[in-house]
Amino acid sequence: MNGFFADRPSNAPGLALFLNAGDPPLQDLPRLAESLDALGVDCLELAVPFPDSATDGPVIRRSAHRALADGVGLDQVLAAVERIRPRLRRMRIVLLADWSHTVRPLGTGAFVRRVRDRGADGLLVHGLPPRGREAYLSAVRETGLPSVTTCYAGSDPAVVARAAAEATAFVYLVAYYGRSGGAGRVDPRSVAAATAELRKRTDVPIAVGFGVSGAADTELMHRLGADAVVVGSAAVESVERSLAERRDSVHALEALVRRLRSEPAGTPSPARAGTGSPQGKDHKNDHP
Image (cartoon, rainbow, N blue to C red):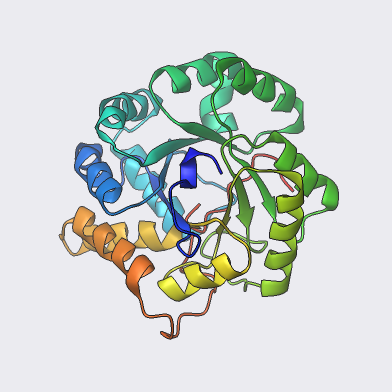
C-alpha cells in the first residue's frame, strides 16, 4: 500500500477528512493541520472552494460559500499548502479542485504543475469532463503528481476498471448514489463487491466515503474491504456548528477525530447518509 494510508496495523483503517479551504478561516489551517497530523489523520482532502456544486448537499455548499465570501481562491489555498506541508510528519494533503471553476481557466498542464510545485501530495479533479481526461492524465503522469480517482459502489464494470487503472494515490469509492449529506443508505453487499473488484485491479488503497460519522461506521467499512474512510459532511458540519456557537473549530474537529477512532464497537451508529463524507463527499472526476 502506498504512503497515503501506510504504516497502520491491519485492524486500523486509515482516515481522510474533507474540508473546504477557508472554512474554518485559513489563518487557522496551520494549527488545524498540525493537530490532525498529531491525532493520526492520514489525509486532509482540501477543496479549493467553488460555488453551487451540483454533487453536494447544503452543508458542504454553505461551507464553500462562506470561504468564497472571505475571498479564498486558488492562490491563497496553494500558499497555505506550501506553508503547512513541511510541518507535517505523516499526514498527506490532497487538493480537490473543480474543473470548470478552477482548472479550465488556467489550463490543465499549468494547473497541475502549480499544484505539484506548491507541495500537495495528490490531486482530485471534480467534474472532469470526458474531453479533458487525456490532458489531465498526461499532466499528472508527466509531473508525477499522485491522482485520486472515483467510482460508486454499483458503478458499471468499465467505470470501476477505469478508476482502478488511473489511480496513483487512492481510489475514492462512493458508497451510494446521491449528494453528500443526502438521504441514501449504504448497501453493505454493494460496497463489499466494489472493494473486492477494485482489489483485483489495483494495489492502491481504497477509501470509502458517504455515511461515515463514527467509529462503528469506520469499522463497518473496514470489514467490507476499505483500507480507509473519507469523512466530509460530518467534518464540515462540526465546523459550521462551532462557528455558529463561537467555539474553536480546531477543537471541534479534534473531538470528531477522537469519536471516529475510539467510539466503542457496540455503539449504535449505522452507516447512513447525512452524517458522513467528500467526507462523505461526492467528488466525481469521471461521472460514473
